[in-house]
Image (cartoon, rainbow over all chains, first blue to last red; front, top):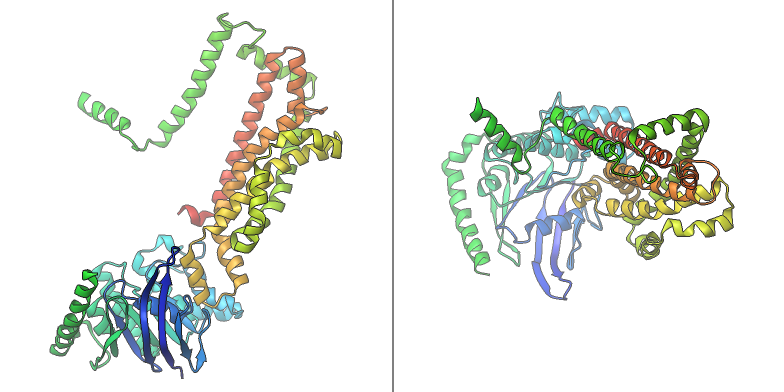
Length: 259
Length: 269
């Protein structure tokens, strides 16, 4: 059982000249066990900043993040992360990349290999174990990054626009793959995106961010049934949610543009 | 087919247009041929006095004499051992220090100003002092190479390690890596190919220091042979010595390059 609680977290960046920019207004947010939450917002709204604070890669100016009641102070293996940029270690093979966290933890080599093999087949990369990241396409690299994060068995999986750099067709396939894994493994996921379709398709709940300085403007439950198939994107329920979120985001994008 | 010829010729003049492997090799070899041809014409044609510049033919004859009469192989061996000894010593000291500086900003702030200062001290200027301290033996020669290389390697390694991709470091942290794990399993493997390339570069510089070290107070080595030949106005031997240095440098550089490519195959994919 794991529960993430974000309490009054804000972030102000100070430039070298001493100029302060508020990226994030105090945010309160809770993610329950096994939940899949997407954070939707225009670019530059501070949604990634919030995710980085949860990961422990950035520190809040005020407030705190609790995971199972324990305050977060710095990064740790209990919060896995998949980044938008390609972050596989180029000197390790796909299999060694997936074993990285297990090795850091001191797991026995046999157990590492077994676990890596399981997740390699889970993300459909059998036969590519001994390839180096540069030999794979962007979609395959992100699938490896997902497997690497999942193999570590984190309490919560943080995803910062993981499919943002992929072409549209690959992106849709990746969404289905990730959702399939979630339906089977029921991991707690916090997924940041600026793509409305993606936000609805993946989530149990969508949190809409306002333009900078960011705060959570609306939360919307997505009660579409599981397992979800891509055809759900043309269903009336989906379209209705999409229309609503499009309005919300449009207002924020215009506000962001006016700055 | 005049049209095809003219287009391919024009393509060769386009900026950044690649050339084939065979053409590249031929062009490289052509310059050596041209160089020797100009040299031969200048000397054998009587345009330059043999006192100042020996002809290629004399040079080869003198080189043969060096090997057969003057045990030149011993000189070459001495020089190679000095270069390698001083260079390896410098690398053993400098690479860990550079990694430490690149990884830990406090350590860098502590050492960087001093090392930057030392880097500009010419190694050859230390020779009189080193003779005083270490005598005329091998230690003094090694120390010249060491001083000439060590500060350069430290600084370059520190820059390489310090410019590690931040997102890889962050990814490693979210996978549970400790600070020690980050240095050992992210910073060092990521920097290794560039560190190896730096060492290759500095090995080339070490060759220039060794000759300077051997010009003063030495009884063996290629540099010593060159000084001896100067006293006898034997330009053929001097040029032969220089060419031998060039050939050894080229061979060691190619070996080093091939080794790096083997060790770090992932970086050239």
